[in-house]
Length: 607
Image 1 (tube, rainbow, N blue to C red):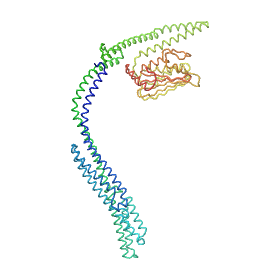
Image 2: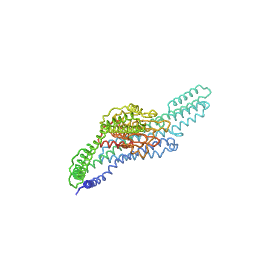
Image 3: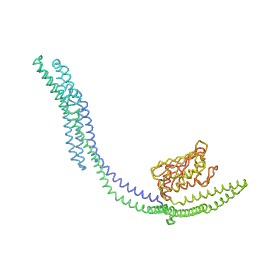
Image 4: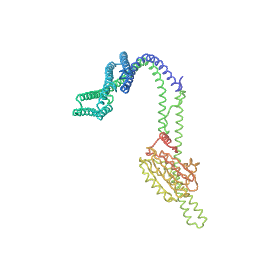
């Protein structure tokens, strides 16, 4: 019935969904019934917290506005005090409701709520006392400040006896203290009162009766001022001390307690809901167990075949597609069996192709080897005979023919030499060594100085790398030699100078970026895709074998790197090479993944 993975997985899924839906419906119904009851506890705690914040705001608004409102001191009534009292009643009610609810649901908050009620009662007492003492302290024409102002006005009637300057100085000390709340102003005020009394005592032109009235007024004014300072300190409205600080501290304590209570209630609510879920999950576990057991039985059978196939594919890939895994071939219609059979057939074909390709490559390498070694010696012998004939020939026309033959021999020998290099590159067993690129590049440039017009080229080298470079010295040298030789051979005399510039920088922590640039004759864009092909030559004006860039490409591939070209005719050419900073041998899978990483960095040609 279930011959495909899709049908089996669909059956497993539908069975699991059915069991899950039945269990979920049962759990959801019970959960909804208990959710509201549990949520009310947290909501009451949050409500008390919000009310407290609101009352703190109302109280601060009272301190800022009503304490300088003459209407309040005259009527001794305030809408803000009424609002404060209503909010406090609501907080008390919220705490009582919270205590009742938590007892029903066994939240264990009884002690915390009792402590909170005690602290909140202190808060109410302190705020009530604050309101009472503010009325006593008064403002302008009311309370202590009003009395003090009245006595100050009385002192103005004795300007001649006391001195206007002294009266103004007293009022200034009084005002400075009210504004700044600093002790020195109290001392200055009292000292000035004492000095005025001393001055009055020695004045003989003032009657005793009048002196007594002045001193009595001074004492009354001084007493009211000192009472005012006492109440200012006790209230702490401007200094942030006294009752104001006590109220702020206790309100902060209540706020922290309520916030902790809200958090604790929320946690207890979550735990209670989780407990409810666990109870009913246990009931639904039997139904789920049946579904899971059925699903596991089917999925185990499906996954066993897939896992086995995956292991075989991994083994085949790690062997670089050369070792058979010997999967069975059968006529089963089951999808996994069909997939395994097709893979086994494909595997055999790939192994056969890889074996044939390796034999072909081996034959090709043997041909290159024979060409570069066995054929080279006869070619050199023929070239030497041609040189002998050239020296002995007297006929100019014959010398010309022999000279052309000699050039052809030289070109053929150069081709066999480069074929030998290709063989070496392909068969080279890489043993990474630490390479000093500066020394290597300058050594190659010194070797190429013998080329025609090499001395007319301005050579520059810039290396900015942080990491040590480990690779094959022979292959790296082959890359630089052929690229630099091309730049020198194809230099142009169209401009006042020709240059060869080499730059080596870190592409990232794992790759080097090498750029070899020149302002030579350049390469037409239509040939860019073919310049790395064997024997391809984009320009026939200068002698060459067409193997130099092919050797570069083979070397780059061997080192798991990438190479690209940017060139315009009559402008110049830039070859960009990416090489790993630390060469490591890779199988085919690793090389493919490595090439994908390189392709994310650049669009260079990949091996």
